[in-house]
Image 1 (cartoon, rainbow, N blue to C red):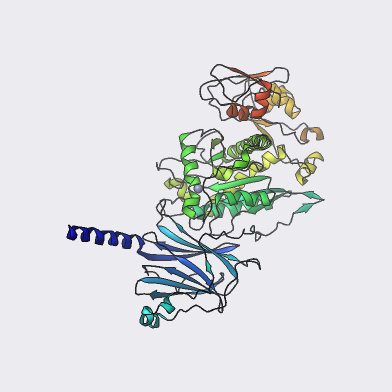
Image 2 (cartoon, helix red, strand yellow):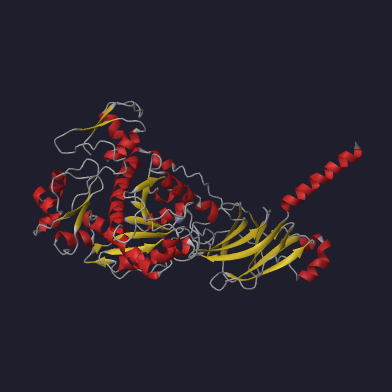
Length: 571
Ligand SMILES: [Zn+2]
C-alpha cells in the first residue's frame, strides 16, 4: 500500500512539473503606431511574472521552469522602446528575460492559448508614453547578473527574488487606451471650398500575429490586404471630395472592435474591410462583398467566412478583453433604428462595389452576402467587407500577388464606392455641392434593382421617364429583375444630377424565389410571413424598425406566425 501510494505521489509531481515546463521556441517583435508587441512562442502554457524596474529602465520577465531556444540578437528593435533583450537562467530551471528600455512605456502581458495552428504564446505589449499618473516604480535596482554569476548565486534567495520594493506589474493590469493611429498622411483635399470630404476608412484585414489565410505560393493574406488597402487609399485620395484613411498602416494586429472604433473616431462615412480568405475547397473562387446580418448568414460560405474572420482576436491576441462581443448597447430602440438605416446603406454601397468588381473579376455570388461579421457591427458607420478573391485558389492567389492586379482591384472597389456616394452624397460635403451645381458630369448613374422596385418607380426616383430608361438600357419591355443594373440617363438639366434623397431600400438578399412585393406610393405594403421569417428580418428587408412594425400592427411581442400578414409602415 505504502509503495503504491508513493508511486501515485511521484506521478502527480511529474504532471504538475510537466504542466509548468515550457520552451520558448521563437521571439517576434511587432511595432504598431501606439505600442510594441513582443511575442514568445511556447510549446506549452507557462506561468510568468512581469516587473517594471528603473535605474536603468527595464522590464524583467520571469518564466519559471522554462528555457530559451531562440535567438535574441537579430530582433527588429530599432523603432521600438526596447534597446536590447537579455536572457538568464535562474535556479538552473527558470528563464528570466530582461528588456532594456530607451523610452517610457506601460506594459501589459498575457498568455494566448494555442488556436488555429498557432502555439501557446506569451504576449508582452509595451504601450508608448504612459500618462504621468501611471504605475509608480521603485527606484531600487533589481539584481540580474550575467548568466555565469547568476548560476553560482542560484542558491541565494536574495538574488533570485526581486526586492519587495520593486513594483510588480500585474498581468491583468488594463492597458491604457491606445491613441488612434494618426500616422496616415493627411490628404491634400481635406477641405474644399469650406465643404468637408467624404471619409472612407480602409481596413486591411488581419496583421501582426494574425497572418490570415495562406495561399499555395505561401503568400499571406495580411500582406495582400495591406497592399490592396494602400492602393485603395491612393485611388480615394486622388479623387477630389474624398479622403481615405487606413485603420492599420503596417504589420501589426488590431482587435476587431478597435477597427470599428478607429473608423468612428475618423468620423468615417464608410468602413471597408479588405480580405482575401481561403476556403477548404481550392476550386472556390471569385470576389464577393459582405454586409452584417442580424439574423444568420445568407449562405454556408458566408457563415464559414464570418466564423473564420471572427476568430481573428483569438489568433492575433486580445489581452484581458472579453471576446464575448454582445454589444449590450445595441439593445436600444434608437440604436435599432440607426442600425437598420446603416445596414441599408451598407447593402446599397455593397451592390455598387459588387457590380463594379464584376467588371474585372469573377464574382463568387451575384448579390451582397450577409453574415455576423464582428468587424462590421458599427451601429452608425455603413460597413462592408470585400473578399477580393480566394487566396486558396491557385489562379486567384497568383493574381493577388501582383501589384497590377492589386491596383486594378483597388480602383474597381473605389469606383463602386464613388458611384454610391454620387447617388447618396452626405449633406455638407464637397461632392454634394458639386452634384448640385452640375460640377460632376463624368459619372454614369446606375441603379441595382432591389425587392419592390418597378421600372416606373425607378424612373420617378431619378426624374426620368420609363421610356428613357428602356431606351437607354436596350430593354424590350418594362420587366425588371432582382439584381439587374440599370444605367440612368442624364437629362441634361441640373435637376437630373441633383443629389437623390437616401431612401431606405429593402435589401436584396432574400431568395429570388420569394414574391417581389409591388412598391408604389399608392399601395400599402404587406408581408406574408413564411418559414424562417423573423420580425427583425422583415424590418430590415423593408427598411423599417422592429418598433415601427410592432406599433403599426398592434403587436405586443415580436413573435410572428407562418401565414400572418404584416402591414409595412411607410418608412
Ligand atoms: Zn480575412
